[in-house]
Length: 187
Image (cartoon, rainbow, N blue to C red):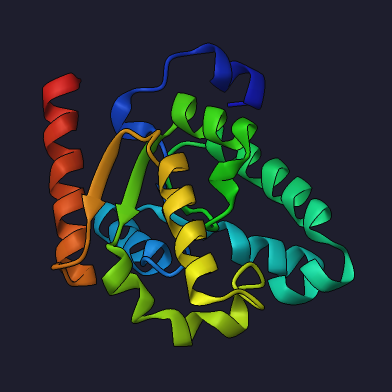
């Protein structure tokens, strides 16, 4: 079915793609892969797809081509992905800041916000700082302000899961069980 035909019919809830949003390093990719396996769906990490397209890691894309080029590629890719069914998509931490991306995700997909407390997240900072250009050169206070500001952006979602006390497997199981229940209730 073509893009136009697909957008003209109402997509059944159980066929909609699932999108994971949240701050960098909260587990969107790891949990997303597990959910995709459990639901027998394709998994797509938006950042990895952009890296593949440009044949370079995101920090190098930022440095070489600039953030605006990255954000444009991100918007085009995510818009295309959101019009496909039966996918599990992990978005980069900054993607949902773009209104167009938020709108297409919320209107065409099921959006899960994976959240983590600041205290739990900052324990992961050392593992993240080298690969996240947005964190580099910032003080811990500036990073916390960014963390809190972006949380407000992720408030637009269909479901939220706080993962502080959950393993990746427990989080994935909870999401899959929630989806299956909603599919039974609303279809």
